[in-house]
Length: 128
Image 1 (spheres, rainbow, N blue to C red):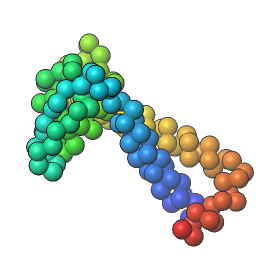
Image 2 (cartoon, one colour):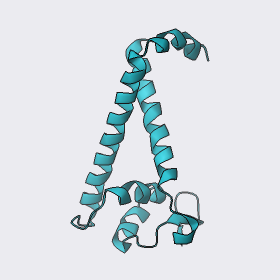
Image 3 (cartoon, rainbow, N blue to C red):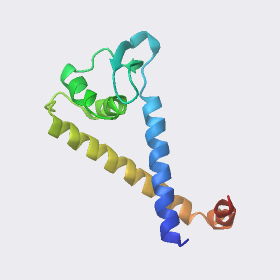
Image 4 (cartoon, one colour):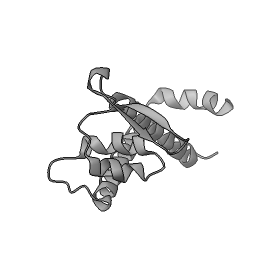
């Protein structure tokens, strides 16, 4: 496997790890939550991680996605009062969020690549 492939795999891995940790970090405390149900993707599930003041328009847009909770938790931090809550603007916010996380992952991968100890540990990673 060539170094370009390893870097690509590493960047994707870091992206998903940072996205997962960001979703957990965005969950509000239990005192400021609301029960909210979606029927997707695995039947009826009740979620208790949404803030009380989620815009109903945003809820309706995210409800139509395959991953409504992820849609809400990744969109809410980037919303401000001037953003129109319409599908196109929410898509743009999601694209910007993915772009920012990808940039962070590439920067982290480059940091690891430039670290001299990384090259010594790479064969161990490839064996597993």
